[in-house]
Length: 221
Ligand code: PRP
Image 1 (spheres, helix red, strand yellow):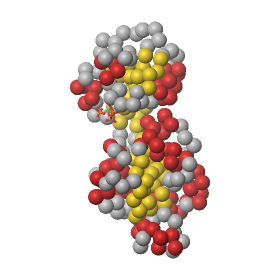
Image 2 (image 1 turned 90 degrees about the horizontal axis):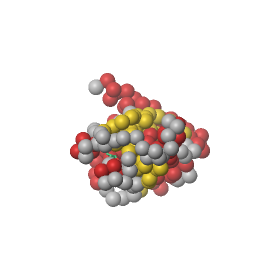
Image 3 (image 1 turned 120 degrees about the vertical axis):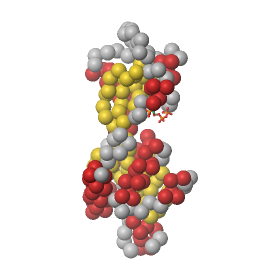
Image 4 (image 1 turned 135 degrees about the vertical axis):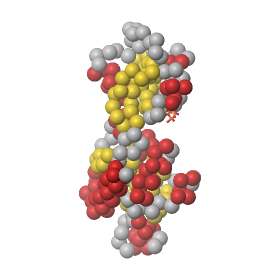
């Protein structure tokens, strides 16, 4: 069945925003475990919209940070996104399910010989998360937004500390940095557009159930 035939049969495809990059492999495997047959050759494709009419779904291959935006505006009905992005972007979406994949944490990081200073500079890809964290700690900091390789900042004297994601800790170890505090744990979440959740509830709920079974089965292994 192609997309037109599926729509002619009265079945509108469920539009899923999938994050490209490090989450994609584990997320697509979780969908396969949930009986959504994402072909393995999608892993390396440069195509941005992929339809799976037989599964009743179409996938938008998105930059992870943009997933909540697509879902908030309803151009995707549901999406997969890390809790880090959800906390930073603060979009008006439903958080439906903790998928338990792509586990890592958001941490405050610095050089081991870091000494407290007045108005420290904090570099991060997550300015909103970092500002809120230090505000809650009652500390005044200057937040500097960077877009990647955040660990460079304390090494080259741009910042006193950084707020960044830690997964294996390898980047920290290789650059002589230490984790000072964990701010929150991160896993990928399934999110939904508020209107889609009502209008396509059956399809979304059915996918949620299948994903939950796949997550539970994985936990037993
Ligand atoms: C992320 C994060 C850390 C690194 C942590 O960077 O910002 O730099 O991964 O992973 P680890 O604990 O397993 O070493 P990413 O690979 O997304 O690239 P970036 O530096 O461009 O942000």
